[in-house]
Image (cartoon, rainbow, N blue to C red; front, side, top):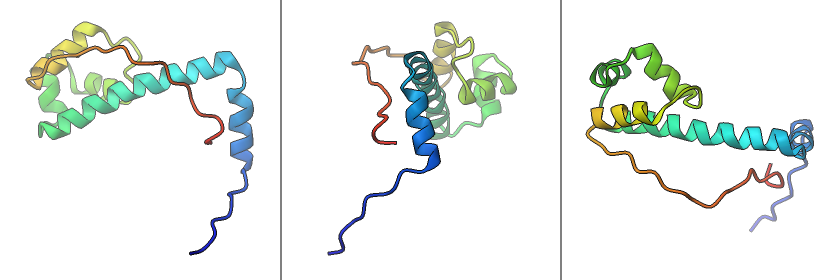
Length: 109
C-alpha cells in the first residue's frame, strides 16, 4: 500500500486560516453557511418533487426570480412564513430543530 504524503498548505489555505482567526469574521462565515444550507435544502426538495422553479414559485404565490434568490442566498429576508408557503407548496411541513453549534474547522482547510 502506498504511503500518503501530507498535502502542503497553499497560499489560499494560509489566507483562510488567518482570516478565520478573527472571531467576528468567523461568526459571519458560519451564519452565511447556515443560510446557504437552507437554500440548498429547498432546491434539493424541489428537484425531488420534480418541480421547476417556475412551478414551485407559482404554487407558493411568488415570482420565479424570488424563488431563485431564496435558493441561492436565503439569508436575505427569508421569513418563516415564506418557508411555510414553500413547504406547503411541496406538500411538506416545516420542522425546526435546535442542534449543537458547530464551527468551521480551520484545521481541516
